[in-house]
Image (tube, rainbow, N blue to C red):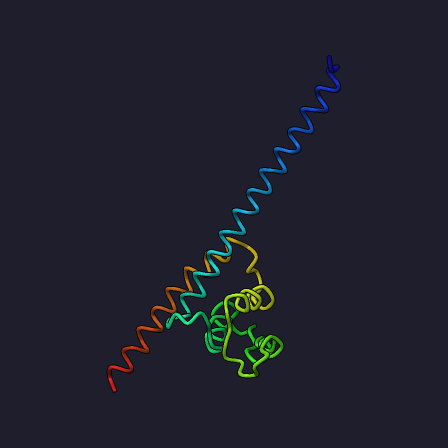
Length: 138
């Protein structure tokens, strides 16, 4: 029979494993939520459902999130590196994620991302509405 000390060690190991498993589950849940929020933002900007954004969408998004700290030309330079065709017009979801991870401060905080996504969608809807109204007036 195991001694009390051995049982304590086994129980401690089980508790460590359970804690590690809970942490891993929480991290995977947060990663899934983060991916979902980023996809929601991407789809919001991809109004024609091509699966691509043009740089103007990223400039608007970056300016919304970071205000005057966002430097559109410098912050979009990564597109030149990723764009083999040279047209700089096709930003897919993976490029969008790279853009967010490297150029948007705080985007790894799920609460910040949730707040940003909700508010960006509201502002973008208003912006789209105003653009549509201006087209109707002409």
